[in-house]
Length: 460
Image (cartoon, rainbow, N blue to C red):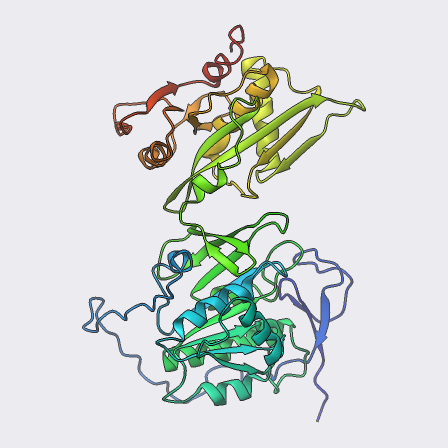
């Protein structure tokens, strides 16, 4: 019998080649190609046997919707769409030490008071998990613990009528299927292990929470198909220098995407932040040039955050651009619009931009707030402390409307803000803005109108 030829798979993107190379041609990653055993060849064609007829059912159906399992951690339930759906698979990724295991231990410990829960770890021993539980004040929770990495053993244990209702696998990269010769963590092992566990979860109806490692680029390690196999993908973000942690939804078959949950890392574990806007603005200093409050939107949740900017003379002739929490390419575009359309000279200065609190802003609605912070830093005139700003800026300098302005203004009014700078309504079909009582709204149609608030003589 001829020996099966080995294959080489990239551990970053899953691309397969017949020979080893130092750089993957598909994704461009270096030193990511590992030799794996070739799978058995599948039979060609379908043969002469007939397949089983597939039965179709109507869309409305007669079965009742399965009730969600609420963990009691409101921020976690929010990003999951209201709780855990029976038979669902949730993948949680994040940097090492960010708090993934801590969050799942807290969630399952709360659920264990009324539901059979199991925590299976392939990275820590039972004693290490108990030490963390004692630090979090969860030592008396009726939670089943186990350390295992063999998927065959895990499936045999969980495949029972009286099995657990919620299972945590920490982490999927440590699991392995003994029928494959490749090492744990490789593309083939991660794909096969996740497939077996998810198939069992859907057949038995328990919710499974998979912890996933991330690469240096912040993406979940292993094959990309892993994110397609699960029902929900969550990313746990945050900077170790800050106490805040953001749990963000990037995929959810049972709820909205782009939802976030905000936590604060304390000595007793992760604590929920019910009002993130008030907490992120608690340390803000008023009447400081270069600071502006942005009324943003994360999923369905309005959130206020402080955007800070600083301009200084370039020391070595080449100006520096340092950005934390925002897109550096969008900053360069916005500075070009300020210089070309508004006559605001920024090219000879070092520009530093920061979103306070370790947050990351991705929506274009932050353009106007960033422009206000830059204009304030250039003129030395502070943005009024009780003012919020939001709006998108085009390359011609026009200020464009953004989604859900009423929700943004309502959040600002709740925190005591009395003035807002917003895009001007355009066209007859534009929805009428209804600002809450106590907020004076200033509409701007062009970026030059905003710059004129700090540079009265500047214009387009």
